[in-house]
Image 1 (spheres, rainbow, N blue to C red):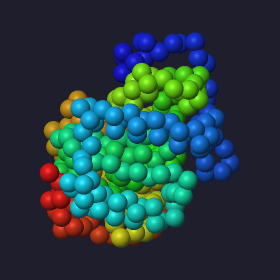
Image 2 (image 1 turned 120 degrees about the horizontal axis):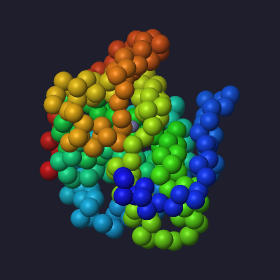
Image 3 (image 1 turned 180 degrees about the vertical axis):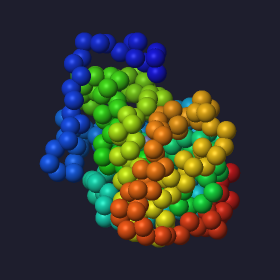
Image 4 (image 1 turned 30 degrees about the vertical axis):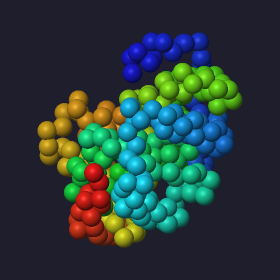
Length: 264
Ligand SMILES: [Zn+2]
């Protein structure tokens, strides 16, 4: 990240566009179409670089994608995901034993097989997927990238064609940290999306509990460095769940075994 920041021109004025307004929707100087355009460029870059992003073949592993989309569609069916119809919500699996997931603007979500294998049940996975979808739906990704690159660079990227820059922006999605407030927002929306649903809406908390129980100082877990935690994270998730009525859902360990078994 330091390298990226060093070579980023500092002549751009930071524009604070994620201010709160009366509605439950942040202000963003980028249009929804800009998010979709930028997301599509990132997707094209990822698919053109299989050495860096080894996308799992859907032809060879159709069941893995069926499981992934089944869980994604449960989240979208909540009717609470912003831009549910406007964004593509394309989810892809990256075949690498890395504990990470990331999202590009416009609803392009990438999940590493290492993350799926690490989790215990589908509620935990749905919680993490809901968290990633919230970053896209709440348009945090554009905010994160703007902080790193400046408004002018991103706008020129959207309107022009600079393969070198899009490669750099795509790589930065894997290393740039979201702000703590964006993290808390994405956690809260993950709970909202899944409450009530087939799944227990506290799944995303279960994921972080599992991380804290294990040996996870953060250095070897990309997800923790790009999605920084604060001390109250699990408590905040549980409080959100209680605020929404403490509805208990399924954790679905058995169906998750099928999902894991569908992976390479
Ligand atoms: Zn996050």
